[in-house]
Image (tube, rainbow, N blue to C red; front, side):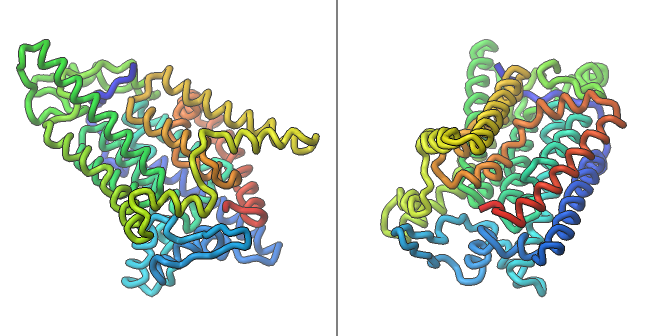
Amino acid sequence: MTDLETPVAAPRAPALRRAAPALLGYAAVRALGLAVLAGWSAVRGKSAYTLLTARWDSLWYTRVADLGYGYEVRLPNGDVHSNLAFFPLLPWLERLLHALAPLSYADAGFTVSLLASLAAAWGIFAVADVVHGRRVGVCAVLVWAVLPVGIVQSMAYSESLFTALAAWSLYAVLTGRWVTAGVLAALAGLTRPVGLAVVAAVWAAGVVSFVRDRGRGAQDGGTDQPDGARLGERAPEASSAARARRAPRATGAPYATRAPLNTTPGGPAWRRALGMLLAPVGAAAYVLWVGHRTGRGPLGYLDVQAGWRNGFDGGYAFARFVADKFTSFPSALAGAGLILGVGLLLWLYVTGVRQRQPLPLLVYTGVVLALALCASSYFGSKPRLLMPAFPVLLPLARALARLRAGRLALVTGAVAVASAVYGAFWLNGSGPP
């Protein structure tokens, strides 16, 4: 079982100051990645900025920002690539920045990505800090920064924007801010199709909280908790001694070891209900609009995705792709690597379950993993599609948090260099389609 209730911690420094080490470390990793990319691209006679802002999906987003929806490409094999496949929040922000500042749409997309990546790092820290403590929060941000495809976090793509919205929505759920969680989930649903994962997390937490309320009401003879009690908010009678006992240790005590509070998990029922109602609004509105525009009804967006050969087949196409790698020896090594990678992801997820991660994180991560691994989309895109599943990295962050500061710096520095080199090689080669 997982626990939705967040412990009361001792008084903390202002949120930004508390997150400063994580944000500085993240900025350093990203600066290293951009510097290596610039050098590598210069040697190959390419523009690093063009690679970041004017290739692959970034071009589709800028076209939406500039021309609106309706652009499509018909391929010789009959496939139709329509820009309706791209959700609107990033193009809207690009258009807004273009109108407010002397920036091109590509410049605006790059600016949004840089700011959103910092917001995402801060959100990841906030979630990990609530669940495991500050040191694990810093490590979680560093692990996310040094992912092999971490360079995508600095591209004019929507992954950073989505991850920021998802992380802060999950943080809002964990801290009982239901309306905020619903609004952020709605915005995430306007950013990427995987916004469904954030909606599922909000709904799972809300349903469980209502069930718990009903059970407690039956046990207490119908006595309600104070309306102001929120997820993670102390009861009025809680003493400073009790808060100290519940406070996490500096080393990042496991979330499950902290004593649950005697409060209603989530506060007033109307806030929870409103948050749950708001959560799916963004995704539903865009999908219904696409269906109306195409004249194909509520399922019209699925037809648009089918034109890109995207769909959900339970992982059948991905399994065939991996199996085909074993038809020759050199490619068999790649196939073995893919199997090991998927196995590692599943092992980390199961470890998160065993470590009793909060239910919203498990639901969110599970849906992201399922949509990424079980979709029939282009297989080279899967690593970046998995990037928003940051809670799966928490077991690694907990392990790193046990290292001494010097060894932690050495390990993360070495991995950051490897990630920067790989990102430069990748973007100057096949890149993230």
